[in-house]
Image (cartoon, rainbow, N blue to C red; front, side, top):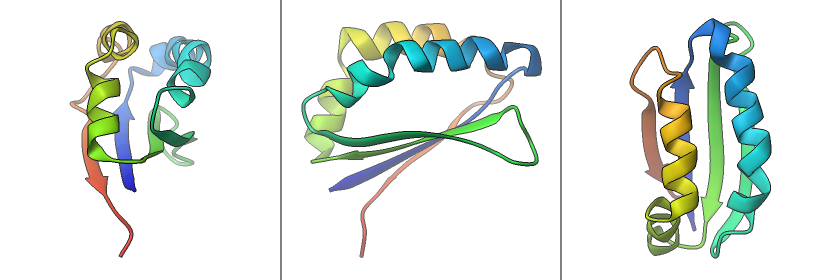
Length: 94
């Protein structure tokens, strides 16, 4: 199982827009083949920082999602709201 963490810092005035994008797409993402879990976290001190935490059966499943039209359209809408480059990493439990 692969665990994917994406930390995103948004323009404060764009936080609600991001939350609407996430709400509109979260079930479609959860229904992608190989997606086992998806959560959205919000930093308690920096309210404009959000983290997606997802579990995938494999890196191949994650990459299939990342190459999908759903990802392309969702990411295109999301990335213009950032104030910083997102921090992204994949891990597995040891």
